[in-house]
Length: 164
Image 1 (cartoon, helix red, strand yellow):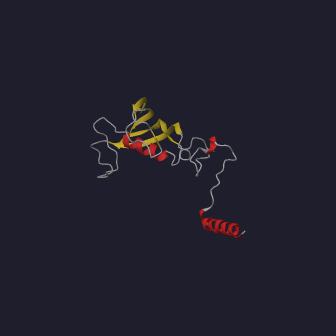
Image 2 (cartoon, rainbow, N blue to C red):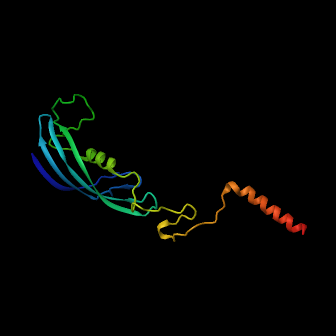
Image 3 (tube, rainbow, N blue to C red):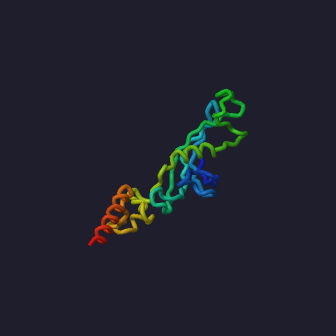
């Protein structure tokens, strides 16, 4: 068994639409490598920085995420798993951790990242952040379903004024 701890550079595209790991950012890997009959069992923790935007108000969001990693890398000459394409294999003495890291990080990312758990989002009328607006913020927009009645009311008022 061998324990290793080292930083690695983040690859491109490690994230989802609203949040992800900035390309080239430092990923802290704390791994344990164990030789087993079928290959090398890699287990440990990866800590990554996150950057993105809030899913409600679109403000910048930054955070860190720690994910558990565990993968068996089969020896190149081993027959374990047969022709299984999903089985990770060693390439000589090298292990490609990127697919394992990508799967773990992307699956652990929040679907809707928030700047704060109680983020109010944006006003549907003016697009301003609700947290920056006063509590009594409102718009006098009539309900479009009643627009025909308002037109009728205006025409009745105009007719009444002309008759007087």
